[in-house]
Length: 214
Ligand SMILES: Nc1ncnc2c1ncn2[C@@H]1O[C@H](COP(=O)(O)OP(=O)(O)OP(=O)(O)O)[C@@H](O)[C@H]1O
Ligand SMILES: [Mg+2]
Image (tube, rainbow, N blue to C red; front, top):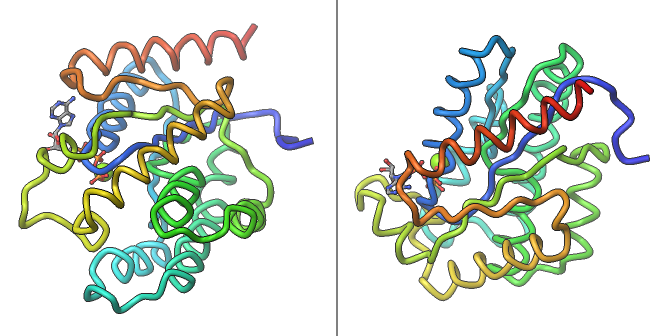
């Protein structure tokens, strides 16, 4: 059985750079809290004090300083920490957990982007999460050039600065994941204005919360 816990709702947000994940999570968090839900917001890499230090390494190390294999392990280390110290306790407390990037990002970036083997990535993801799978994953999809153009050049991190070809492979990775797992991964057109994406997302999440209460 993949998910043995009974409570809480685990939602992850995926998609290329600048798709609007962080923007939408903030809007969703506010809308859910307004409706009385307990919400825990976290991100990967990051989540707790250890994960945030790993994040700093991953996003701000000099170009070429981290090898592809080491990069994979750093993301996995942050994930293990986030799941154990943030996500599982929040789910046990019946929170709606909103996680900015999760396992699908590793498959897309380190698998499709860097070319590391998908079977290794899948095993490492399963090990890092202890088998925890999101109840729903929202894939904010848009052409990478559009997402990158939304970002300020001085705010770009180590991964943003990869080539456009790299980001195109990453997008393809996300799209293949969505095609393979259509029940878990819901795709949203992130090229639309943020205020149009937000209600679609909120309605999807409210429907999910209702169906679980029934
Ligand atoms: N639907 C949208 N249309 C246009 N601009 C948007 C939209 N959503 C967010 N933005 C803007 O694009 C920029 C990137 O948004 P945001 O940080 O939410 O994306 P992200 O997916 O979290 O990116 P990253 O992968 O870098 O964390 C921000 O300046 C944000 O205000
Ligand atoms: Mg973000």
